[in-house]
Length: 392
Image (cartoon, rainbow, N blue to C red; front, side, top):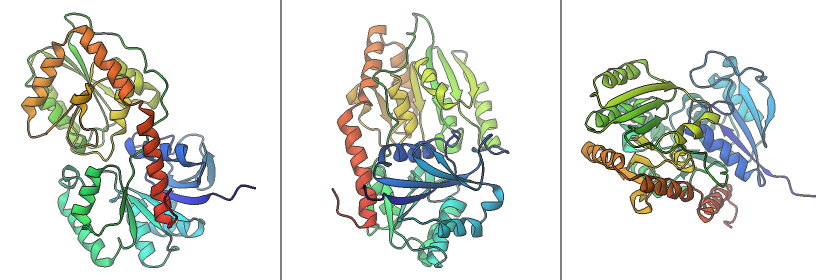
């Protein structure tokens, strides 16, 4: 008889079948998919997708359901209060508590407070900040974030927490905020299983504009306004497609104004939010993914673009570095918008055979099996370390 798997209780703001919250949903879903042979995942989340007013259709709320290899409880609004979340954690037997997002009021701050006050069992706890300690992320609503950090440290909320960094860069960011004594493991977010090849791509015909896509949540952190300002500098024909759910009405209004101020060589198309099954084909229909994000702990959307064979032009604020050396894209500093514009103009002039070769390299780059297996092992070690087991 096989030994019982250790139970990992996950709290996260959104989970499958949701998709509008982006990377954090992928992070948890791929973790479950890759590690369920060793760990029994129980997930507590909300009953609706980001921005939706109603619950997921056809899904029962406030009871444990089987979703893939995990058990998930979709909490209805009456069960999303602080007391209800603390009670749910206390009543769910688990060996390890896994918190996603540092600043989530209901799904991280409430469990940390309940843990500190003894309202839930004091189990080994892993916290994944998901890039929220990057300089770009901390610069958004900085006063509120500084207050919480100072208050949390003073109250001892972060004692005996095992932190997950998705890269050496994020480990540096975490220690810069919490100090060198922070106990952490570097374990990269896990990608989705990939097929042998990306979706079919229609090459750009001579004389056609360069087809560029921005695909992400439309929020200040993702930096769509910066992308539009860069494209206003570009002097070659470009067709720019913007895909993703809107989060901030004022920010979207700003971006729409910027889109109207660009020159005649740039056309802008707003695609709205895409369902997961539309993402790969959308990337394949474009020549470049432009994503000057302020900061990502991993960047699942970058992996999705590369898997579709679409080269990427991103900021040097993610773990995806050395892309130019690999011949699959570029990671440039946000302080140099002219460099982004120059790179776009160079790609527009690239011969068709060179562009196709770049696409083939991009698709192969993200499918490196040795790197994937190493990332899976690092995540296993993260949980074993937090549980006090020997690393193996």
